[in-house]
Length: 275
Image: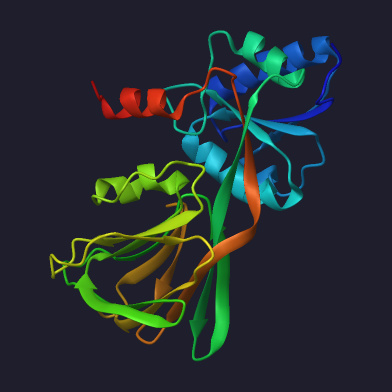
């Protein structure tokens, strides 16, 4: 059986000797199979020309890589080095057998939506970024609540005082949104969930909307500029009163390659300790 993926980029978590050691083993294995291999770290993720990217690390590492290479359409597979991950699901033990199958075209294929967010101040876009898990507006270190207005497709939803709001993809529904009592969405759904963080009005409940909708969050009271806009919990910018955040589905998607026996419900049971 011939190789489906002949050029492979291997990403390891930056400044992590354990991840680098596994990446070394992986490189030797891939070369023996006849693959052309390039080694990269997190900060190299913007320039991938291979058929497949393999990430060695945890979900956070894959989030960073996925955001950067999604526009190129390069599929990803993840090697898990620690706790079971929602995104990196190939165990270190036995990774060669699973990767051999993937490289020869035996795998499950998933596509995950990303969010695209723009921050406008005084009518001018001053920041733009994408997120695979979530875009979050939240207060900083002060205990004071912030106030914001939420609109969906230009229609007013509500004005709320809260610690913030999480706008999450189905992928992100099992991350920060879950800890804020948001719903778990099946990863293949075309949907976005809006989850308030500790709202002052308890009737403000999580919402699920279509992925084609546009969410707008207008800052009314940023708590003395003590509010932040964050992306997958890995980058953030400070917000001011009057700032407007527009969030919609990105044009491209993240392509994940899974082992043939992968089950999202198996992961949920293991991670959430369901019976």
